[in-house]
Length: 441
Figure 1 (cartoon, helix red, strand yellow):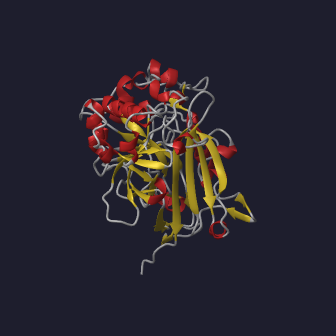
Figure 2 (cartoon, rainbow, N blue to C red):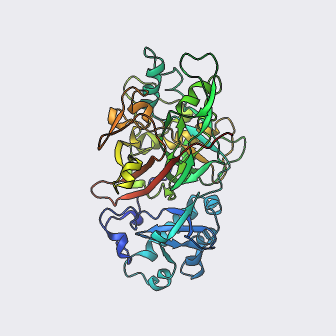
Figure 3 (tube, rainbow, N blue to C red):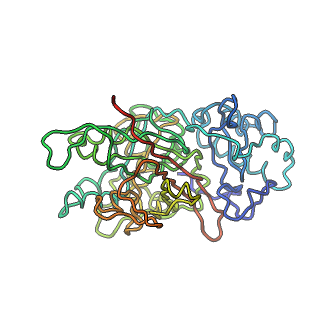
């Protein structure tokens, strides 16, 4: 587990790019997240880039200038490809070497400013693609508060199933329908069983929901049949993005027994474009703790490093913008604020459990954290919790309410880390918009 602070985290560092030094900037010199981009409206190919201030540094172009050497140069050349998989596969030493080289090259008074300025593209002029070729997508269930809130709606006297506090729960999702922030998707259609009916009907979901999650990208892979231990688990993690795992609750309620969600989840999952490395998040590590009286993790899910600083204090926000708000030029209304520090299972524990049976990891694999609800009502990270199963609409202001998402609604996730004595680390935004369902006729 890599936890050491180094010169790249120094909050006093400034860049020769002024926008990276602006107060409240998501992408200062201490962040340097990765994405896949191209100029909007042209025929350019997608390639990998690094965020600095309000610009994207074209990694392939930067590598071609010759300003990097050694392992950093190899990593920068891998970043010239159309997806991040080649860079991910190089492993943690290469990622760290590239981060250090980028940090030094982008600092104020660095000698290569003019060469690298020519490699910058304004973020306002680009479009993004899914950062990696995602071979496999596993969605976890790491918030005990979300699990309890959902369970209470169906099992008031026994909301949490007995396995939850012992095993990181997850299921395998669909990677082909994962899209990037800014996407529109049609309202899903599927089977539901209306109350009091004797047979199901097929039609558009009427209980469309969000799930505020984080996406965890696997970097270097692992061998089939060989478990990844807790001490090595984070070495296999490239970084974190925002993830909205849209959910059709009415379809889910009918289909999920006995095998779990299917059409209720696989129609759309939206990612933010920027992947923030674990190294960038080092100042925001916090201890992993369990409530008094809860079982401690089994040995294969435990380590001293995980207990000391296996969790991350990432602030999270959900905004909902209705069509009326958009027409009026109004921003979305905040419906949730929470933190990733409330998760019941850590990233290292997810990796260790995923591989304990011999399952292998591959560069570009994606984990979803599961809905990241916190302990209070305002920290509920899905409408099914916020509205108590549809019984209590959420007030949005301007006389508008929502129980479930309506056509034209846009949902934006935001994430950032911030505290005195450390640079702000932002994740950008993850936005998706619901279009009307397509007809089956």
